[in-house]
Length: 118
Image (cartoon, rainbow, N blue to C red):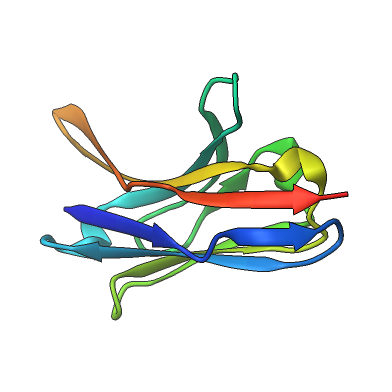
């Protein structure tokens, strides 16, 4: 599967952004999907995840109540609605597809930059 993240930008604190992740090359609905982010000088960290059919979601504590992950399997798309953005949300955001078939296989998109100014 190939993934392409988009929707990043430069916004002010309190603003909203909607990130998109477009998947191609495979059956999208077999993958659990997630968003991760990496700030300068820091390790990549988990932000949110959603199961194959969208029935279950999970968020890092800092994203709970502000971010919403969703997916549209018919369009091979995943989204991250980010509200009430804070400067500490500044990072490159990556989408990941995961499938487990005896082994765990992870696929990453190229990342989209989100910059939140105070």
